Length: 586
Image (cartoon, rainbow, N blue to C red; front, side, top):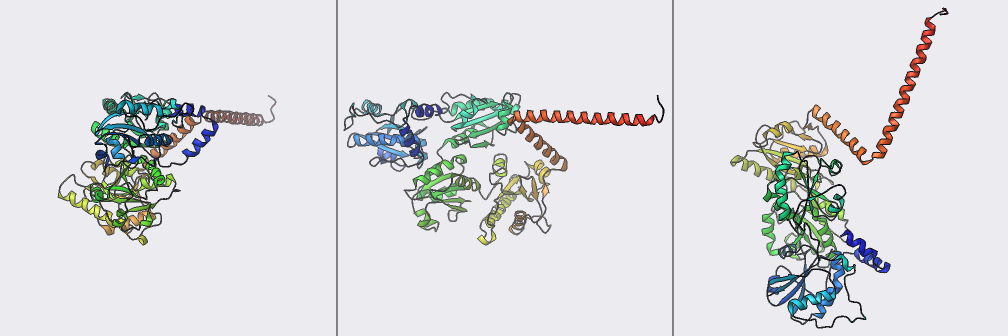
């Protein structure tokens, strides 16, 4: 992509370049006045008979915007012929595009009697597209091609940039070894899953065949890469690698997400598959109740058809979620009636949690001027359910969540009726906390997540961190500061009841009483010194010239100081020696 951009800009006339840059600044929807738009409801029925040449596009894709005028010409030229031209909006119908094997935008598939015949590849210009359709359908356009005096219309950018209509991630199905020289370019475009490892690490050796297998399974979908931290220590420090192996998925815009789940192949693959799916999907009102029932959290964006610019912004902002939770969109006002919201509230983004389809936990009114950073923050801050199990697959997601929530932890047995009862009580308290009146909530109140944890499996960790020794114990944790509360402000032990937990939460949020440390004095001192040394190391590696200069100045200063000290000692010694002789001449 970078090579294409460089060559394309170098060969662009200045006037066209400025026009192109101006147009690129507006993420306008790709539409054709006469092109039929297909949806999951009518796609199979539409392509079941005859020839259908279908463009799969995304409104925010610059290549799609460049291609739109040429597509409009084709639609007009084939109007009334045996070849039907149509479009699928992948931003709104991501599941359909995934089902159709779409790897990038725009991608044109030719269907005959319901079956995929061929995908158009190569430079997208008028002559090649017409030849493709004539060859595969024996149908010529109704209008003649442009005369030699008229330059054929192609995409705005230079055609040498488009050998393929879509970016082909991981074309060879192999693990890509990255170095400091290649890392930035490799991850800049996103869709890269990187393993940071050390050759001597036992867990890394165990993961190696899984990583190789994953690269083959994700061929043409996701780049699978690795960095040897023994050879590239500075790069690994820069990427905040704190242990081996660490797995990060890099998306476009420099954002990354750590994979913290099971290292089993099926689990990693399922996570990777979700990560490469389109970030938003359309939801029919008839499926609303069932969708909420099946998911602990969903986002729903209800908008007007003309709000495509905002939909594009949401699509980009939702990418770091990696499909969890799912973002659904709809322009059906039935959703607003169901939620007792006025139509004037559109466009609006809703968070629905805990299988409750009646009351959103949070709402965000959107406008064309809503900053993407604000939208991204809202999506990250509302992604966790009110209550959930805390374990190896969810620990990082909860404890190191972007909005740094307070975490209520309740220890529960491994199984049995007691566990079920305690889990239900946790959920009930979470619901009461969520449904407090506005007057009870602070203006900028910190988030709270209610969790339960297996007291058998995590017995040692719970005891060492929070002094928990059995089932039914409750603590409120601020993991970022490594502190916790196990009593109410009154000094009574926190009980698993809404009265006790809510009182403790209010005290913790207001800072009204003292917390306990999860680490002892020695551990805290060791952590403090380690952080200081790490900071110094980071400064030295990031600014080597300045660091060497400071070191030289320090050495010179030390030398001059010692020299002055020795000179003073010699002077003082001579003076005392002279006095010690008294009036003697020898």
